[in-house]
Length: 391
Image (tube, rainbow, N blue to C red; front, top):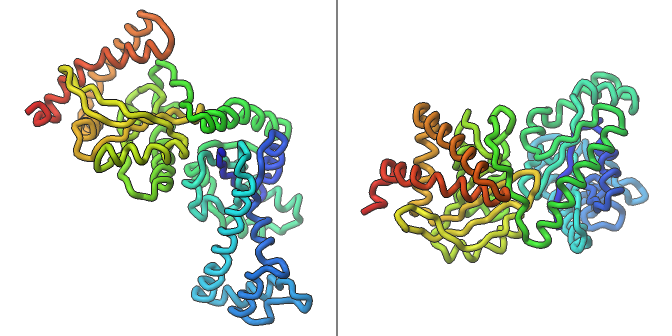
């Protein structure tokens, strides 16, 4: 199952996009609907709310009196915490029931208005933001819902701002124009990314490799992409392992192939082997392999690659004290600090890319040629940065 988080500020048209996703075969788990379900008459939570806040929070017919509950629960932080302590577990458990009910579905979208505010994005393979500037949403709320300006502005201000949402989500769906444009954008997203992602995840197959091209960092969000990937991996592995952004995309201003390189540190290769099935569930299938250190020296590791065709990520699972970990970290830090070495490395990369393309072959073959051609340089740099690895 490909798990997708869907969010958007009030007035952004999230329900419109949600309906479009359903038309393309996705199953929707609606957080607002679940929040209403758990307080319907006959639900255990309703009795607990009456016990905690008094019988006045119920209408005479036994249904929830929402204004009365708000008046009782939001008088101070202790009462609010008590409300959250009752609501959140009930909503969490009911949400889990909904996901379990759709366990065989290919794509499940969790529609959550406060996805970013509640820091939920790490729990999903992909997070979609229905994006409309705050000023446009303000006008929509006034026009379509009849709100006055102050009320609409206050509701918008209580949610995350536009920049915070954009930084937290993987895909931005612009819904500020005609609905036909949004519908076309959703269709493209489904066909080019979501459906292939789901198929790759189900089959345990990595997405196609990025093209052998050096990309201008100004045209990418590598730091943001890496941070989002790291947060998902840490959440999905129980916050047990250090994960670092390495490689050229971790060096500000350095052109690179459009691939995020991460390394996850484990105590030993047994831990790496035991972790592999979980990483596959998170969208990173892999296998045991080794780092080539030069001079016919190798070092065991596991290598995993992302199943998402919209964001290439290579994940190196290495032991914490390994030569590979220490060299990757030291080389990254050197390139960040030393502009001269960064320029020399960039020149080398451009030359090796040209040579690999001249040699021809498939994209995978050219990437292999390119990688192998840099090994003498990396051996030289390892002598400089990790000299004890030659003892």
